[in-house]
Figure 1 (cartoon, rainbow, N blue to C red):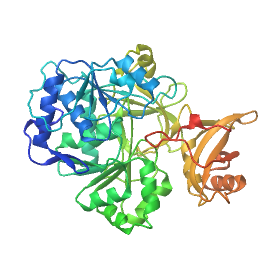
Figure 2 (spheres, helix red, strand yellow):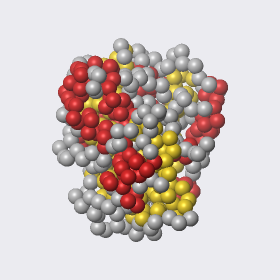
Figure 3 (cartoon, rainbow, N blue to C red):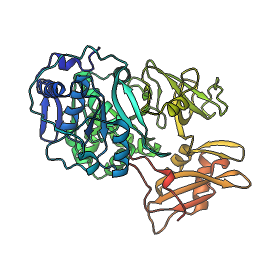
Figure 4 (cartoon, rainbow, N blue to C red):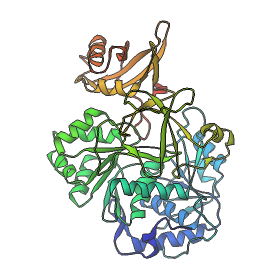
Length: 481
């Protein structure tokens, strides 16, 4: 078995993890995870109460060292969802920080409190291979109960190594972020990524611009965030000059989990001189593409396929688009060692997710430029609008709306129309609720930037857009009531 964390095999006194005023060196992390791994060996699947704390990182690394699959649990999940995940994954034990109160559905499991000061050592389990499960991460469940994506050790190592190539990520880097640790962004990229490189991670516990400024001024070189976080940064820059200076010192600013609006890109670049790098991935695929650190950071794109990842766009009938022109919309399909092995206990869903020749159907719609850059335009189920004979991606209309000074937030959907097939509907949070821009003004604004057939036909005004824990807009929650 190839070691996922070579730096734990010959540990040093360098800080590996820091959460607030609590930290562990590589030597301390090796000892604590070794002791817990010895306790977990042969346990089958284990659940992790994934709070943004040192104990979560220790628990997941210990499970990986023991060769058992970890199931991260979102502490904000309701009892019904937790009950489904636990009955589906059937863990033998739950790992939690001492003092954490667990809901009844979780507390029925045998509990092991994570001791971050434990001491022990363990050799890699010889019976565990690169294809064996490392994590079982449950999807958001927007179309039914959450499904458990089984991520093998191979997917984690190949994704993190591909990102190291794209981002020139080394053991000298210090990453700062405030992402949740039950999702692949915060856990795999944000915790396991630095540990695989032998670098350091400083978790903010809760995202805030003050924490970002402090850590980047104190030697952090990389910042990971979601668009909601970067939007808050963009809004704060004019009033927090130290934030702009700190961001200017960063080697790499990375945004993911949803598209970062172009106007936020531009505001951050104008104030800091730094461009935000976007990448594209999913729970089932980990990372597929990224803008490279040594490449052109084009606002609104997610870059090019990572090393080892094959990517194609296909038409509705499944035929591959062979000529990329930056305009033709198709569904993204990917193939490579970064993919999951299947959905736990769901062979039907697994079969449906792949083509006969092994391509994973992402359900994401995109266009691709001639030089390979990919631009996501939305989800096939919610963001592809067929209007007047055109296939239109909601994402580009949302970006255009956000360029209007009277629009703070925007989402775009389609609804049935007897004449057009579907009409474009905009959901807008105005900058000034007392004097919102008119529907006609917004339609003209979009038409002048994109094309007349892409203008919204209906505009709804809201005080806030519904979002999930990762900052993604939940379009299925939008309605006219």
